[in-house]
Image (cartoon, rainbow, N blue to C red; front, side):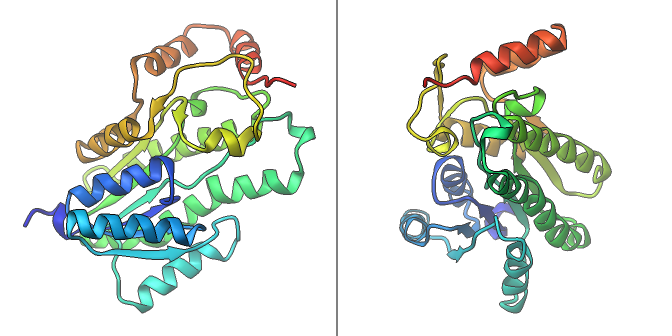
Length: 263
């Protein structure tokens, strides 16, 4: 049995999109999965599919990470059940596409809770045992947005900048520990993210999107290969290259235009 076969992997936001596809990737490795999201029915469907196809154990854990008490509750439930998490996949997150002052402040604060605070707390709770056992690791799902300022999505872009910086720093601190630490930074991806971020409205500028399956496979392979920062897609990597040579004022204006939506 390979090391991956005996791993227990906790994936947040596993009910759809990139999180769902990452669950399939780790299931194909033979890992035991803990699937976390708010949508119990979707989690149960996914768990049933993975149990049947991959002959693995899949545990469903319904949880709302916008609530401050949720990370601690998840940790305590698993500790009480004597379940050790070897790999933590912090995938849960959401965005809002609107000017900062035009969106409810409470919803922006919930975004900080899900995208930053819950990610950090879950990492802080599960990481010490990984270090003690010298196995496993952390896979955080960031975004190309983390490399840019984000007018019209200011808080979301800022949260992904945090995820990128936090993961890179953590990877360096844990060098030589036996753990893998990686951040997946996709560009536009075909998920329900856009519907949540801007409702049924459309961006004025339309772009092609990578499939969630391709993005997840890319990130999963990067994690297995111990690549700290993974940006899937040549266009996305070129965009990041441009941020290093273009003036910041130009980048701000370009992103603002990109993030405008049809009225």
